[in-house]
Length: 313
Figure 1: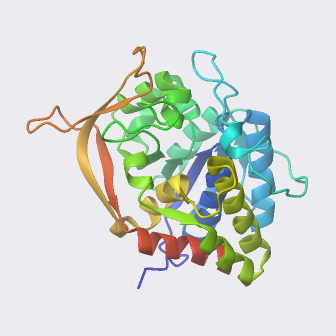
Figure 2 (figure 1 turned 135 degrees about the vertical axis):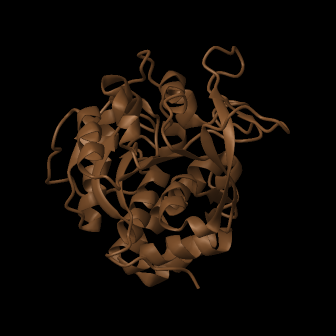
């Protein structure tokens, strides 16, 4: 049996994201198991304009009345890396949501992050995209690292596993300089990387289960899963796809289903072949820890949680 958080014990979170198919499923998951106090958007899977529009539309789908603040349209160095080949031109694959009626609260995500962590002492930050907004907040107000309860990111990897390159995971590769700022900041940091998220796979059978449930949210998640499979595997629906971003949310709401170990992690910013690599020190006598790295996940229970969120909202 898995624990179902009540309104009294749901963690309060601020979600920084770049929706994105798996971000969208993560927001569904977060709407069920956390108390979302606010959302900030960043360019990543698609442009900032699209990630912000998607966040607004997803909140309306889920009935979430939370402030949404747009953030960085490009990385700290100014480069822009997107992944339409994985998420589709709009970021949500073939899923079409109504044009949102609500508008964003501001265009200054970094300021909102600073304000929020100072105001809410138990606030948990969850970052599902490139770390540009969070790095900008830390550079603008360095003392906020002492105010942040913890920061859980979907990004990087142990064991040198990459997806956008052989060495680098997309969110870190999209802005390695921002990631380096965050990893060296002293913040209480949890890294949910590819080595863990590839353990949690959903696919055609889960899509069919969601379609049979026939609710607005379950049908949307089913469409997102099918789109993800088609884009990643050229339409081979027998394949499964990893639930990257939902894992980061569930690591906050259901930590009992994860194994995290203290490690020292450095972000490579200058390598010709390894730019964006998260170098995890796994020596017998490693350097001082700056991060808790995820290694194991209870896939069966986590998939149950994602399906439960998708069918009960």
